[in-house]
Image (spheres, rainbow, N blue to C red):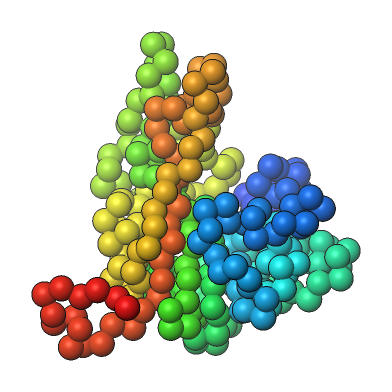
Length: 265
């Protein structure tokens, strides 16, 4: 079974099991869709009429919120069951959403320069080469288009267990290139999924090399000082699980790249 087949099966099962990762948009969230999607103000004040790609984002949440906010939405996901949630929610809310089943590293069904925003939740850990994903996104984004993404931090994926003193043990080498091994601590791993560790050089460096300028970077806090050992929020106090990045697609002219200092307008 290929990594794509395994991940499709894993996410189909998560959707059928009504996982927290397959929770659909609520009426309260739809009442303030942009605030729900973006509490940091990274999105424009209005997305009405903009073309938005929700990448690897099936599940009936992100696509619904963007559509309610007036965007022209395309949602791409590998899991048919996750996409079924988008179909059902779009039908219930009378929304027009384009739905495509595809892998995030092959967006050949989409035209070049056809989106103003690409929004991708945690998912790049499911492909071995993140640069392929970034290249696909760079191709479908328009000039100065926004790419918002969230990723699993490499250190979080290196944790293998919690010891008897409640310390989190790093047991996967930083330069591990194969699918991640099974581990005892599965707090931030999805059952049945094939995952890959991407180093900071890849998460950030490959993004820059694909033609993006990073405008902001945050680490969403998932820790709680009151959480007990064994709870994912306890681990979140010691190992940050995620990083969220706002980047903008820029076509840098050759003469600008030769300058010792280049500042985007």
